[in-house]
Amino acid sequence: MKTNIPLIKKYLSGKPWQYRLKLADRDISSNWSKWILNPSGEYIETENSEPVLISEIEWIEINPIENKKIGRLVPDKTINHSSEICQMLDNLNIEYCVDNGIVKIPTNRLQFTIES
Image (cartoon, helix red, strand yellow):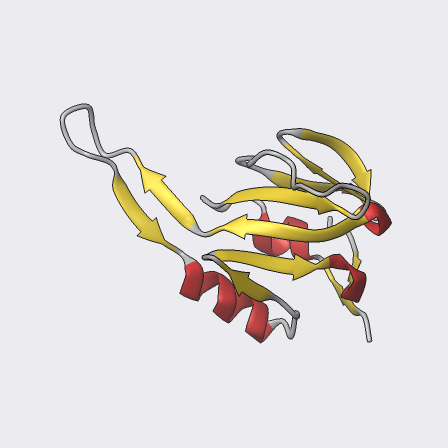
């Protein structure tokens, strides 16, 4: 059963997390990006990738660790957003797994929509 949700625009955009895409035809994931968007209903784009058809993406990976800059003389603050992300995905009934601290969302179960 596919879930029809505006996942990217409503729930992932503008968050302090990092994202990358694992394409079905590649053995490794793309580089980490600071943003992710859904420019049209059929594509996902990140800072380090051009628009990719959702059908070509095996999963979306989310790095929940935020390194927040506090100041020049103060060390960065590390914030783990894992529980926030997992709770959000649970509330949306979206299948995911956590692998070595990285949240993975398989795209074969998702149907994306755009919200204005």
